[in-house]
Length: 350
Ligand code: PMP
Image (tube, rainbow, N blue to C red; front, side, top):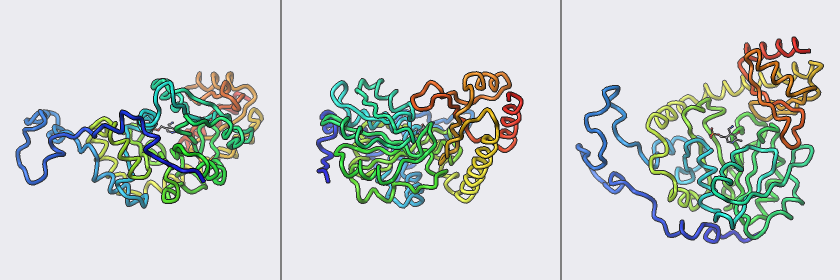
């Protein structure tokens, strides 16, 4: 067991920061007239509801999310998509040019993008050929300046979940933060790591409204971690990073959990059907088992099939130039008619 000390992880200048607070945060009590924030008191001619700044800490929304996820609102930071959550983690914990982060490719591209934007060195420890963590290579690669390890489970683009015992091994042996990106967790046979937060002070989980909730355009992501970690992220987040319309629509979505769960079931059923039907095509060598809302398929000629589909108005993701995904296309599960059309076009190709 390692000794975890959050204070040693945070960048020095961030330790000293106090979070931005608006006059409205500071004000406690009853008021009818708000002349403190230079909003437009007349309201927009379009609608009178959006003239005020939104709640910077989104308490009502976080309370609802917390009750569904069985955590406290203090365990949650909301981001403008989980992409913002990635950026905030890197900025809070990694000193540019000095600290480093570890990723396990093939994986989600934005960990690398934000490491580059923030000038933080990146170490790549590829997954094994069966898309699991290479624990030996990971332990060799981590050094005293490694602050974050990003794990994606279910992983994009390989679609599989990482083995729980491997992730636990890292949680037990790494004294930086282990970030588990659970963007696709609702489509998975595995359970979330959220209940493990009590056992691991170095665990950070990211989830999003962009996948299972079907609300990618709202840009709403979540970081779920100890209140101490969340407090640090709150110091550096933009004050009004979640807009009012997003907060309202997400609250509505959370009131319709049954509908969302029913839709997830349909997507999973459609995934199994599409997997089976793809496997029957001669141009498909293999469809990897998926725990997500997409499949990774190894095909006879990825680029030419990609172009053929594109010419017929169907866009998939060509991943054939990505390490360990040579010859592969990543295909999002569409609606039943969309999947039928995709299969029909692929049959035409063969
Ligand atoms: N994590 C993973 C693994 C993803 O695949 C994606 C989106 N493709 C995201 C995070 C980003 O999610 P968001 O829309 O919440 O920024």
